[in-house]
Image (tube, rainbow over all chains, first blue to last red):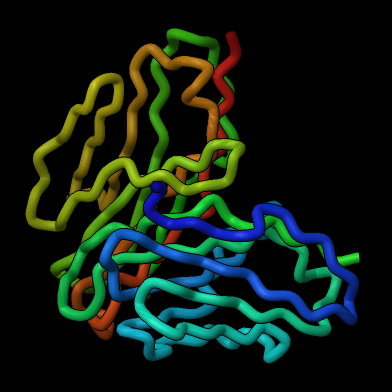
Length: 115
Length: 118
């Protein structure tokens, strides 16, 4: 089983829809991350969770709502999105607090298209 | 301020050529970590290597080698005898131990798209 699994792989939704992205990690990590990757732009860190607690929110619009029920699962709830939100959304996990320099392990991403 | 610069946006080579991807970083920390990731067209970022700031020894793994030079704040990546399967976007990233420490936050460069032509 792959280390970090993201579902769905592709998602097309209208601006008024509500959907959720799911991420699950099987690596025993305690930190999880959401990134947005738009065409021609650098990877943008959106949220960081450490031991289920949100430790970083990089000024992400409220139409993106993360949820981390446990250290293995991370969700990104989407509602009333805009066309500029179309992007590849990547989830990652790593060792958590106090263990420095650990690599993040990424999922395959969800390619989101907003109509 | 922390920053990672990958000045090469796109590189195109012919199979079997050697290619070097450049990475320059900025940090005020004395303890930090540098990474390279590969992103094939499928989308997943694949971890390739990590170096810490106290280990300047160059590393070789098969056709891949990395040259870490603190004097020039560079961490360059060379692929020897490139292959079509090496075609991907390659990201260099920096993580600081002192930056709030709770998680291993990565600062990514903008990536270099490598196209290896048959």
